[in-house]
Image (cartoon, rainbow, N blue to C red):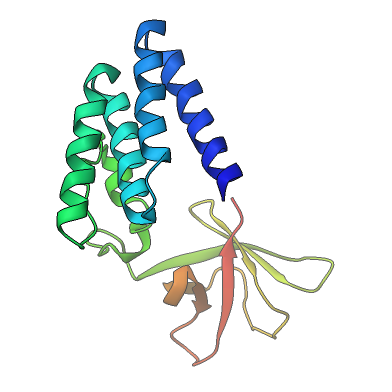
Length: 182
């Protein structure tokens, strides 16, 4: 316990002395010594917290009286002191506001189903269907299910759940999952 307190106090002295002139470092060590002599753990913690807050926001010369005020108020009331800290306000951009919500936005101008004419058909080495449409888009089948398709036919690509797409035809009820290649 004493080792951890001395470690914390030495850490506070080192960090505070790097930001403050050497004259104020002795006042900080005096304030730390006062906190170290506190027998009540809650009072000691409040004292250290107040010193660290004051050293970050104000010169260290004012930390000793503030630490005494905190100790006196903690002694009179048995409730722990609350310290309010203002969170830094960061400038948020449009990308920051939409991060993680891109998939939840409504698709106002996105089509759910588009019709294309097949211009070329090929198969991958794993027997997956690769279809090229008249607009230059290439779509590849995600599985190895059989799907009857011919060049010149009109087929649709339909948007599904979780950004999936299905290739289908109005003449039959069969669809296969596809993904865009290019």
